[in-house]
Image (cartoon, rainbow, N blue to C red; front, side):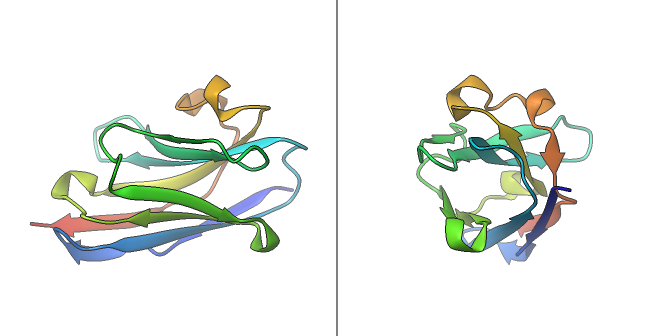
Length: 127
């Protein structure tokens, strides 16, 4: 059984930083794309960043390029999202997702193909 647990969310002022973590357990596949997504009330879930677990390829939404960094610690089976220079527009529930794929480029940022999800962690940025 695959389990993904996010943590690290909270409230921060604009310009501040947060680091989200997603601890994963269980077997997804031999080649896995893991990603961070976010969803605000009344809006659809959108991709923020993704990283392939073996190839290391990374992808970012234009809105977060240069501010957010996705990384992973394979030994700890943990995915991270370092978020700097936060803006009020970054306020959302953040989710990590995973899908078996040979490349993130084939699946990201398609929310519908990511089959495994965590419960989310709330990020609130005040201006």
